[in-house]
Image: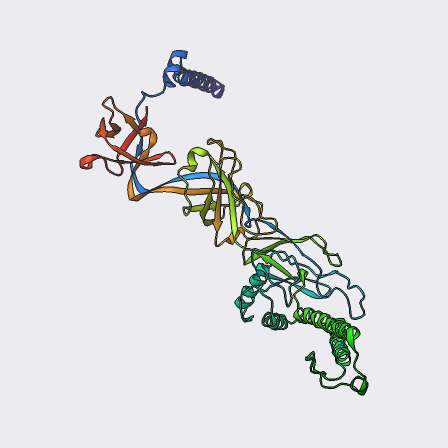
Length: 484
């Protein structure tokens, strides 16, 4: 009974404590929630931007370069198509049969051609490359003269095979030099064949027969006509014992014999003047500029080379691009250029050609070189006569590096058109404004104030401008205002 009486007050005390705890908890939650709640006005005030102030940028000191930036493509000089001007080797074999003209060794793409290089082989015979502007259009051999012969003689001298003269006449000295050249390359020259030797023998025999006939007509005295052949003194017994003719018949017989001898001597002389080592029309290709590079072969093994056999280009990488007419006035030949590839690699080059934006149609000069030379339009001239038209520019890359195998790919070209003299103070173009007095100024935020500082503006490039201020009123690190 006593325990029950004691448990009643204890239980009520616990209940009271529990109620008080709940009240305190609810009150604290309400206070916390009330402190976090905001009216719409309070919320808007809390999100209001701070008071506007000047936007500043630090003055820098650096080297400034003005540039023209454009897109270009990678090329290997001007492409030129090469074709053979005739057959290689002799026109026929020893028996007179035709010699097949078949490609037996192809031009190799990417190969570098220098003077005396073998471009390809046809029926086992070489096709050489020499420097010259006159195309190979005929077979050259003893007795031939012309500018093409003089061109050959100069090339032989450069190769170390002296033809004995460069007068433009193919004599025995030139024939000997051609023979030496071929053999130094491991090939046999086109020397006279069996048919040529047989024809020479026949012509020599014809001269001998004519001399004997003349001696017989002279009645064996040998003095009237003065026979000049090597067998003039070797009259046979029949000619020596034959009675001399008389009167008009004798005169006609002498005239006929002399005419026959003259004709035989002329035929022999004409043949021997062209007798010797020849250079077939198809065995040499003259190119105006060497070294050159084989771009691609135009034939396959076993083909008959009756058309283009290859295309060749200059050995140096070139970038071809166009710049706006307004920028072209700043671009000059000899200016440096940076070339950036799509994969982030860089090489350097130099501007080698800037076309004339105002070139008149028909004024373009033809490119040098024979055999398919291209006009100035193909070399970069516009020929449009429109001074606002984009202007073609060529950039040469002496050390192509990453561009070696990138023919036809697109690149970014940056041409440095002007440069500051050393390091200069540079600010954004937006920082410079013109005051009412016409003087250029920048606004400098300094010691809590914004002051105007007069400046002289110089070179401008890539959104930056060179500035200078009198008396050191502007220094590196100063904060110039570019906006509010």
